[in-house]
Length: 569
Image (cartoon, rainbow, N blue to C red; front, side):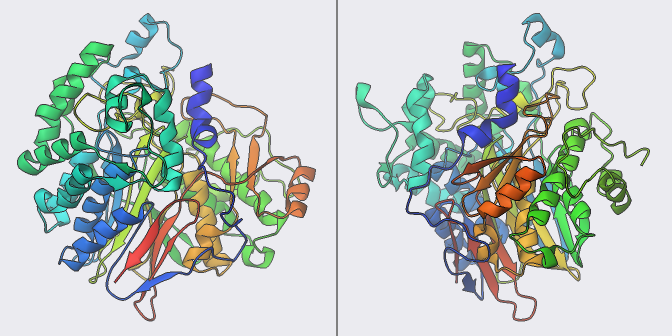
């Protein structure tokens, strides 16, 4: 039961950003910094130096896709507390040439030996949240390759060169990332300690803010990819090292699992919200939860309610409960289970589900609907170039450093995304060989009149669809600018059923309300039956770029809950 609870809430509890006390308290409509504006190109992500790496690619003639790959590679070095080439990747791309959106699911699958029978023999009721049994094949590098081949103009050698240079010479660690990095101090895996601690002997420790971190092992892995492409990872030395570790520690990986891996180009799905088209990647990700929430909210005059209205926050949380009840039942790999996406994101279905809502009382029992009849630390980056190609990209190890295991000499941790499978033979998200697990990471994009308008994401497990909706409501309904929309006080509702099928307590869940939400709002929510917990900062980390439809100027935002920046030229 402990691993089940951890899978449900670990990101919210364990991965809360460690921000210094002097950071400004979020306030509705007030930005912690100015909006970044630029004419030509822009990159936004949660490490300023990684954003600069991407911007240099744009300045040197690369397009948005080139810059996104280079930035992603830099983030794997600079924020290994959240991502790396041991994890997965999702992306939405607007191609200026074809004037069309493309979706990429670069997530990995369960090993061929990963069966329900295996876990039954082990007498395990849940998949552990760390260790080799939590592994699925990492999809990031193949995702880079798919993006580069389809849309890019630069070679891996050109795109990975800045990260190789930083890995060999060293890169300073910023304060929020340094806070997360401390978790490695308690890890026992030799590969993790060898790679991510600094110093000598028994005094080895995680780097503090401002200290320089080097990763020659990752530099070598990147060089192998430059020389031999994605096959260096899936059919070469890197795969061999990971499988050797798997054999040593009781994992289920085989070389065939890596050789068979491939990403999938998918059609993004959308709903309309007040004249805007909001796009997400379909399951096994949770992006459609944001679309379901927006459909529930749209009939209500949120602008009239305002960002400090108890009515708004009550409605938002109740909409989330309905969407996440469906998430727990239906969201899974569509190659293995029927996922009724079109029904779930329809306006008609939202209207029927909305009849369960009480404007004065919090829901406590929220059954999943039947449309046939009626926990993660992550990085996000977005890039827009001079031609207005746009990339919305998200990448993750799931729990911070992932499984807490690293193949010696590779320079990266291996994700624990496989722990999100259910060990219930009747569940849509049940473990099966070659199946992709339910996924929390979701990039988003908004178009208006058939043109890109806003490319954005919010990090942090279950917070992601909730954050998508809150940012969009702030921007569209409350008229905030792109920076204020991310900086505004945020709530996270925790306690819905999870994609592993496990319920959580207290009944009806808990609202984690940031300090900037007025006390009178909290008291009003409590009177309606909500359980509210005050927190300084919720999980997340918004990055976004808006294209002004009148001036074509880029407006970038990077919220103060992270170390990041939006940079342009």
